[in-house]
Length: 84
Image 1 (cartoon, one colour):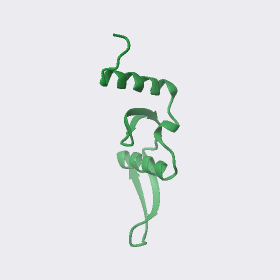
Image 2 (spheres, one colour):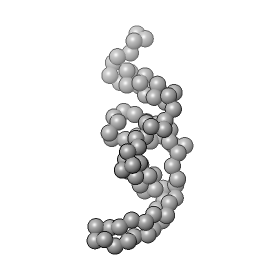
Image 3 (cartoon, one colour):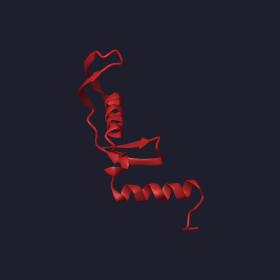
Image 4 (cartoon, one colour):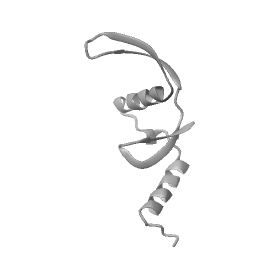
């Protein structure tokens, strides 16, 4: 598992499992069918964006513990630490 963020959810990282290699098929803007293998960060980004198209956000599958850590980070970052 790796930590992943999203520009639509500022200052949030979640642990999420992604495939590091995919075979994909899609149509380009000219209507031509493209079949190719993608690897590494391109594969991770592809899955992330496909999730968006399917209405899935990275926080939909994250653990409550990770959300809690992010809340503590945000409190610290914005100076709202109740522990002081």
